[in-house]
Length: 328
Ligand code: UT7
Image (tube, rainbow, N blue to C red):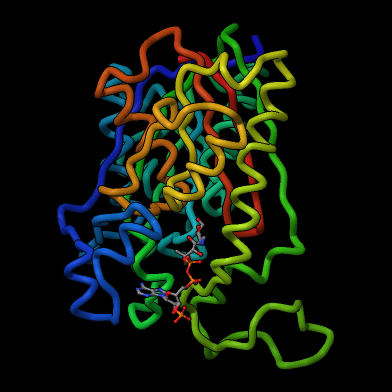
């Protein structure tokens, strides 16, 4: 068996909503600019919920959907850019909360491409037979690293989590993952504790911007250029592996970063926008949670049905990218 079967999915976002109107009261912006440049109308922002809590709430829904109990899970991987602690991992706390005592646990940080990476990692454990059922979670508390004075960045991001329960299967599957570390400087959040950053010595200079702030900073234009190029590239490379054409996919679930990025990817692939599921207007960019949130919503709304061929495709800090073709 080389593929995976998605047994259940679920997502959770904090109740608190921050609209474009709300943002315009704290930073110089307006609904019209945000909507036309990004497609975002609102985002959910946590009010003190730890990242692990968001992950647990999403995982409980995915387990219910799969009709499984925490004890039946052998592997938990949490994709997160915003873990609560350096150690222990978010996955360990999720395991404790779910009483998933038989599961090994780990966190992975591949930023917004993280869910494609972690789902592919889980699949590699599953096909060896060592792991029978895996829980893959994207959980992000991006508001904890956002500078609400930086109007070009703060308008983009929201908090949330989503989870898949998966097992090995013979279903269609292909993945194509990659990274370009030359772009590390374009999207970066430094060490959480700015007073303990490494020494200002030439040998430690890795080319990232001079800042002692832990907030996420980005060169929006460079990230935009990368994204519009890499989304169609990664999707095409994964499709090639299974001799499929872009039009053979029933639904594309792209990383939800900017509507214009998704529109460009759709036009470069020659696929109409109605085949791309978009949640941006309601959740903004939730980093590694954005793909599984959109997937779960599309399933629950009847847009993705059993047997459909799906392409998950993401990009993010690193710079990282990944595409997965799977049958639901
Ligand atoms: O998961 C990956 C995360 N990152 C991304 O996906 C980022 C990708 N990049 C983008 O989505 C876009 O580059 C942004 C949305 C960040 C910015 O859009 P843009 O069309 O590239 O705008 P810009 O940076 O060229 O700014 C145009 C103008 C500037 O004013 P001037 O210099 O022309 O007078 C900005 O200062 O818009 C101004 N501006 C804003 N105005 C109102 C920037 N942010 C805002 C804002 N409200 N929030």
